[in-house]
Amino acid sequence: MAQRNGQGNRLALPFYQRPALTVARELLGKVLVVAGEAGWRSGRIVETEAYVGAHDLACHAAKGRTARTEVMFGPGGHAYVYFIYGMHFCFNAVTGPEGEAAAVLVRAVEPLDGLPADARTDGPGRLCRQLGITRAHNGLSLLSDALHLVDAPPVPEARVERGPRVGVDYAGVWAREPFRLWVRDSRHVSRGPPRPAR
Image (cartoon, rainbow, N blue to C red; front, side, top):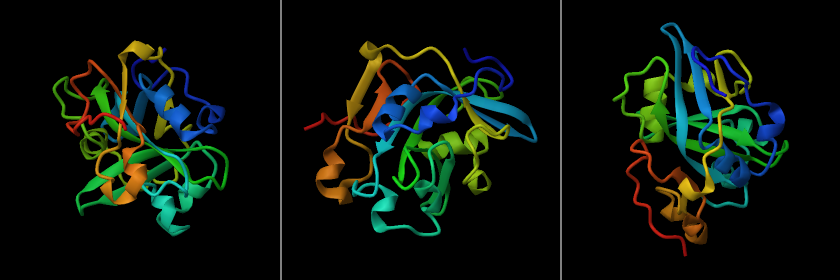
């Protein structure tokens, strides 16, 4: 179970070295922990999106292996952090075996240690800003002291919702896949419209 100040049972590498959709579901309820100059900051994950590999046209890896996506082609268990819109960082957990180029975007967390209870952590940019995640974390092992995830009780299936990912309309049929998962009754889930899966 997650404990304060970043302590607890860290998720081991085999947790991440599985299909992205499996990891996206099981990350719900786990705790994301970041160590910084101000101490530990953490949040309980309440929303994720799976990007299942280079064949997934919504996945960054669909455009091939680049300096930006290199970490995605490595083994699961590392951080993939990218910058968008000239203002936001987004944190992903790389999943699967080496070469698969899959990842799970963490879209929202419930504030825990080191954050005000009313901190805005709904949305990938906001959660990175509140937790202090930057490009400096890109490529880090998710077992590192600086950035890791801690085990916690699973979210019951009855509380889990699924729908299309947010902001990937360019991906054709892949935009309609129900690869976004969130905790139904959490007020910290991002504001993206939960359209029904087709």
